[in-house]
Length: 102
Image 1 (cartoon, one colour):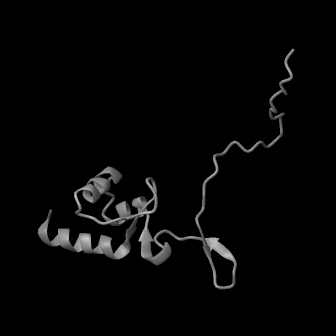
Image 2 (cartoon, one colour; image 1 turned 135 degrees about the vertical axis):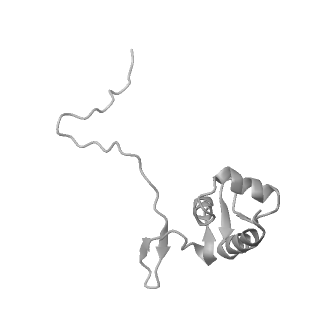
């Protein structure tokens, strides 16, 4: 005999939240409160891969990672999956490659 509980289903008029949750990065303010983080407002001017791609002219993320592997662009690895870029490094890369065209 089965002791499984029946799954909860939404009845008409019930508002079951089916939307996926999105994570919002937060910044701690001086008064101790938190506020949503604006893009590019990371710690010490660090940018996510998506933010770096946007600054580089909407370059695909695999292209950026290829540039990292080729030592053309430096990154900060927090883990295998978390990769950040210094704003100054992205600006240097843009300056160098705008001048040479490569």
